[in-house]
Length: 245
Picture (tube, rainbow, N blue to C red):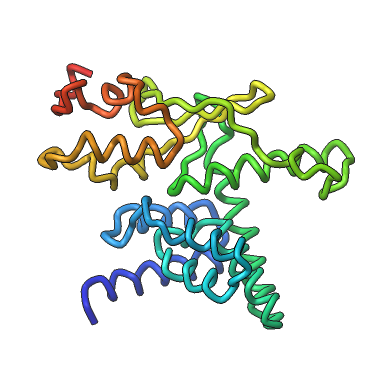
């Protein structure tokens, strides 16, 4: 077995332990194992390809794309819901039920990483986690108001983003702040994502371009020069010392 194979097996062992223990500690252990792994690729396109395959009705390709996204998306609620959809379509009730349970577990502990405020931002590993959190919050809000889970107008439970920006909290790290059309702000700790971006390689001559690509993929205004300062880069693309930031 290669080093990557050994690493993947170790990650799966941590994941299985989380499914059995179902504790914040076991969840955090998996999250840290993935974030520190050489196999972690937050900009991996596999999940986007999975959603496109689902939209085109190709559920088999969708499932293959989700599998390719692991271990990066191993804790993604969306990934396991897509797999549940696939198993339901092919009549595998046992696996469908399993993936539904994994989806619920991942969603529960993802929501417990914070509360979306500046003081306690949600800690995410992939940009799709942001959508999952906002969607689940809107659904829970709807249920608490005694409304139907499936409204006549589905847009009522679909987050409508009107603005995104990055900020560096006083205690360090980097947060993305998403503003919805109702004026609510959602804070997400994206340090794990940025730590694996090519932009974080100080010797990378394409660092500035990498930041721009990352920003575009997250819907952030790439003309905002504050973005570069926040991530430790000057407007000329050269890295700054931490004391200068």
